[in-house]
Image (cartoon, rainbow, N blue to C red; front, side, top):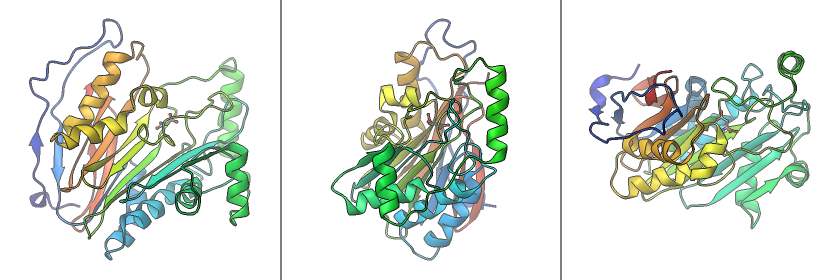
Length: 328
Ligand code: ASP
């Protein structure tokens, strides 16, 4: 476990005077947030599945490898895991039974690559990296993305596992065949890393909201919504109901708040507050932002209780509960 003496933990979130639109959420409470500070290379990623993903990233970062290689290797762990129902192979399908994937990646130079509505490719993050590095474009979608991937040596395969298919079939028989966005049926892996040279990179990959409409794309492949990296300032990644981050360009907002001097937790809280202010129906919604700045400070903020993030550095690894607005 991380040696707590290596962290400076600071309480924040006092006196900011936030309020919620009437009726949009039942309860309101501010809990103390924690900004965590580390020295040297570090990787952070969303949710508990980040613990395992971070280990793969740390194999690179811990040997002075670069942040870009680390985040790609890290999130590939979740993409390949058939037990993970929200990312890559084994992800829950859309309402028509198709597993469709969104992913993006950004490096320390501000380069970005992205892929959306991609089917039959296990590692969309690596396709996104190839788009970033080998094409003049940022984003490829659907059939074009698949064509690009296959022509670059990626193998097509069926990503719908028996387990995911059975869950989908049960949902289809019970739920009158419509997508149900709620706080349970999504969980992107978003990962941010700071390497030994002080460079930042980030990656984000997901099968998106379970049982979504066919063709639906979420925030995860949208640069500035699901992920943003500015090597002068910091990086941010999002998870949760993508439509909310897309309407507010939240990851970009978090980085801009940090550019203005905010620490990561405060910056993430501003982006959640923007959603609360601008989007009125937040019943059943969850969003979470995770940020890492150039100085190695990190933190998160979510709309509801339940979001956590994983951190790993030379001192070890740890799962941290996010600060949040509401406990229900
Ligand atoms: N943000 C993702 C999406 O809306 C899902 C998630 O993070 O759980 O597609």
